[in-house]
Image 1 (cartoon, helix red, strand yellow):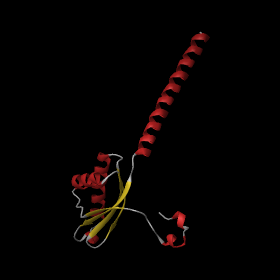
Image 2 (tube, one colour; image 1 turned 90 degrees about the vertical axis):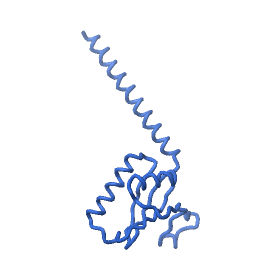
Image 3 (cartoon, helix red, strand yellow; image 1 turned 180 degrees about the vertical axis):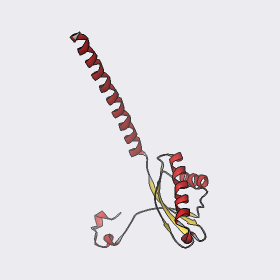
Length: 135
């Protein structure tokens, strides 16, 4: 009886070790895949008349639509943030390429007037940064 119990415990331990090993291997493969996928940062200009007058509900609806399309498209595109002005919305995205940005816009019903690949980012901190830290 003791021998059977010990064998059962060993089988359970071995099974959980294999499962953990497989899970860790899958996570490592996913992380490696994400690391090798080049994500660029883009600024998108969208001309939307009266965008600055949209209600909180309208802005939330637009955001929800965008997020549902992003979820459908997968990890090759990420919405960082957007800036709403009087008649335009400027959106910052991380994506593999412009094509997926255009697909997102088409599926979401959002206009794209220009897509600009971000070269670098500066701020007031750039004024006093070491030159090696810029770019």
